[in-house]
Image 1 (cartoon, helix red, strand yellow):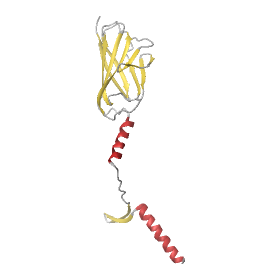
Image 2 (tube, one colour; image 1 turned 120 degrees about the vertical axis):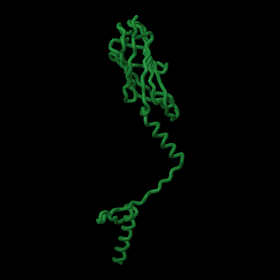
Image 3 (cartoon, helix red, strand yellow; image 1 turned 30 degrees about the horizontal axis):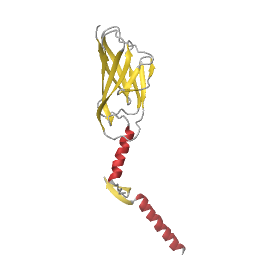
Image 4 (tube, helix red, strand yellow; image 1 turned 45 degrees about the vertical axis):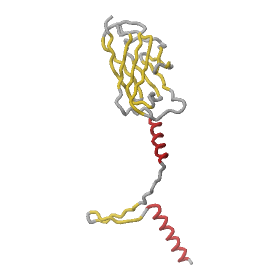
Length: 194
């Protein structure tokens, strides 16, 4: 009885080993025998809806990946030196989901000689946003969209408009930058003589 029990236990252990680790085999490489384990290949079955759902999930959590080249364009209105009540519009051409900028912080850095009020009027795609001003930096947070949005990702653009500025007193090219999705975009805008 003891011998039968021991044999049964050994058989069960062997079966569990094969199911867990696979079948042992020996390969011959350069005259040497190399022992290894062939693991059983697990065949996964997915419904097409499950595969599509996985892609949609990856897209929705990816955020502003900015896989496409991004660029920044700045327009000053008016462009004359020393002008008051100036409106600067920054247009970002980049990769967007459903034509909308991704949730997160956007920071605009203006030239040091560009004067701005303590509470400038800031808009994102013509919608007013609550911005924070620190010296010559204007920042705000894009809130997450409400409701259901599409998962279409492609090239697009969005605008940031800052109003009630004062142009520098001297004509020349001035640097503007914008941080979005972990990337800093920069360009220059020219102020012309008055």
